[in-house]
Image (cartoon, rainbow, N blue to C red; front, side, top):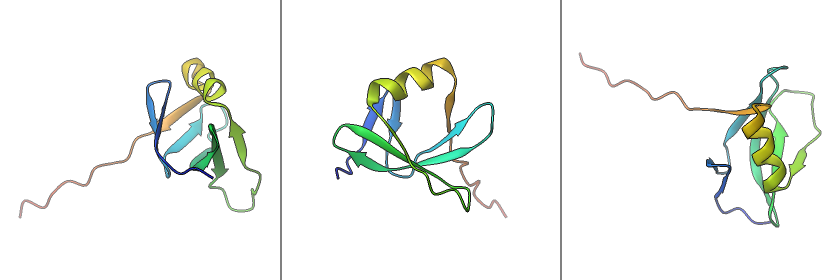
Length: 80
C-alpha cells in the first residue's frame, strides 16, 4: 500500500483528506492509496465499506460536483 500524497483533478489528496458527497452529505476520508488508486473510508460509525477509485474516476467525480473536498477550518489566534 502506497501512502504518498497525490494530486487528483487539481485537489491535493493526502492521507486524512475529507470528501463529502454533495447530495447525501456522507463524508469519507482518504485513508491511503492502493497502487495508483485512492482508498476512501466512511467516517460514519457503523459504515464499514470502503470505496476505491482510480485517479481518473475520482477526478470525474470531483469535476462533476458529486464529491467535494472539505477544507479544514483554521484556528484564529487569541488576541487577548
